[in-house]
Image (tube, rainbow, N blue to C red; front, side, top):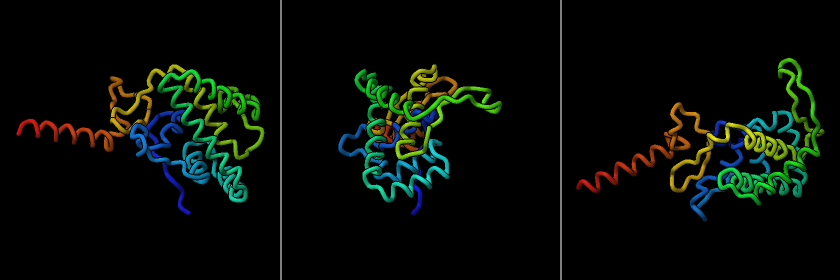
Amino acid sequence: MARATFGQVTGDPGLELLNTVSWRLRGPGREELLGDSARVLDWALQTGFLDETEHARLAATLAGDAAAAEALVADARGLREDAYAMLVEGDAAAAERVASRYRVALGRARLEEGGPEQGGRWRWVDSAVAATTPVDRAVRAVLDLAGSDRLRLLHQCEDDECGWVYLDTSPRHNRRWCSASDCGDRNRARAYYRRHRVAE
């Protein structure tokens, strides 16, 4: 089976989960990109929350455990919606749910000092790789971003229906679209069409 691929426009792994639904602001027309556990694992691999060995091991495990597979999908989607509400909408109740999920993740990890290649920085290391690992790593990344100065660069695509988010690292911080060749082109075409309709 071919692996699913996901657009990565955010500039931060802590935000990538938020963009696993397309046309978020379209209401009933939004498109779920995490349809099953295989897609969650593919997303985690592409984002860097799993390596190839971990991906293969968890895919084999979840193929024989329907309950764990369903729980992974629900966990990933739940964190996604709470993280979006927290980071984009400033929802305090959602922030508490993210914090609770973070505490659970920390209970399954230990602090470990990195070697010289990591500059001696301390990091969280999972005690074991399990079906919960992709979301454990994702929630740690979300909170890392939430507590950093980079959060001030958070911007939501200005398309009326898109809803994707990203860090605006453009020199003048004036990036308007998640993708210049997708939402950008579509909105420029709409503006062009409106201008010429008025001129007729």
